[in-house]
Each structure stands twice: as structure tokens, then as C-alpha cells.
Length: 230
Image 1: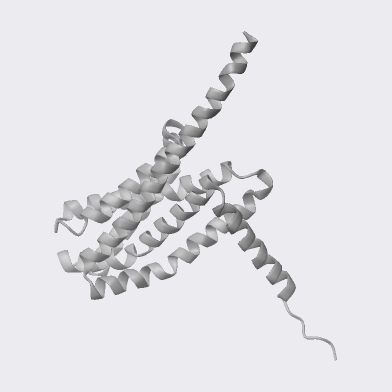
Image 2: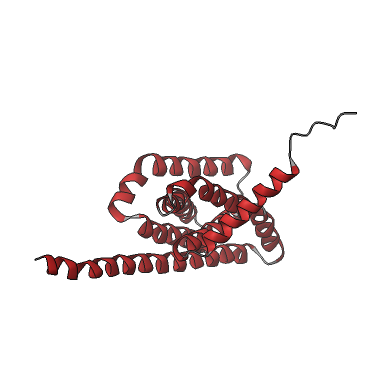
């Protein structure tokens, strides 16, 4: 009797898993790329709780129903489309990816911090704008940073690992956010998310300083050769 046909070769699957973990381990050992992977995980985990805790806050503060909350989530999508489609290229050219990592994390942290503190529609809208602008910025500049600082023959694999890291971070976020909101309160859920994003902000700031210092060291190292040629 013939062997049953299988679409998945166990050996191929094992090799694929080994390759994934090797690429992930390789990324984490590189100071710049490893830091970006940590930022990506933290930011994605924190933002994945937003679809749970923001509607709960809208109900608690303003008595919003599903229709009203759907408008706000449509607004989040519009903000990200405008940012990523029209503005992010200009912002990247002007400020650089490292600055935008810091700025995007700061926007998210401020939005998550202020939203539960003031039961005001204006504060609610401004906070949503800050959060959606921050995540829209980070979702663009983080993969770009990884791609530009990875050898051409490794870019596809490294970006695939980055995508899987983001997917893994999205799994527990809504559950954790909902449980914290239920048992500790909405303020605690938002504060925890803001704290996580603040950690990403600090990491991004350190990344910016390290990258700038490396650039200055490179320029300083090239100065003697120029003087010698003169």
C-alpha cells in the first residue's frame, strides 16, 4: 500500500523552525536590531489591548454603544492611512527613523496615560489621535529600520521573523488587557500599557543615542586620513 500523501514534510517543518529560531537569536545578539525587536514586541503587545480597554472606557465615561465606538475605530484607521500614505515618507527624510521611533513611542504613551484621567470627549479624541499616530509611525519605521540594517540576502528572513514577533505579541494582549481592566480597573490597564510603551520610548532613545554615537565615531575615525591626504 502506498504511503498517504502529506502536504507537510516533518523534516522541512523542523528545518523551517530551526531557521526561524536561528534568525531570531541572531537578531537579538545584534545591539541595534535586537533592541528594535524588543521595541516591536512591547509596542505591539501594548497596542493589542486597545480594542478591548478603549471601548470599555467609552462605555464607562460616555455610555457609548457599538455604533459610536465603531466610528472611533474608523477614525483610527483613517489617521493611520493618512500618516502612512502621505506623511511618513516626508517625516522620515526630515527626522530619521531613530527620531521617529522615539516620537512615536512618546505619542502612544501620552495618549494611553491621559485617556483614562479626564472624562472629556475632547481628551478622548486627542488621546485616540496620539495613540493611532504613534502606532502608525512605529509600524512603518520599525520594519524599515530592520530592513536597512540587515544584509540584502537576510532581509526577507529577518522581516519574516519581525512579523512573527508582532503576531506573537498580539495574542495575549487583548486577554491580559481585559483581565486587568476587570480585576484591577481601567485606570490600571491604561497605566500598564502606558508604562510598557514608556519602556519602548526609553529603548528607542538609547538606540538613537547609540546610533548617533556610532556615526560620530565613524566620522572622527575618518578625519586623520583626510588630514594626511591634505
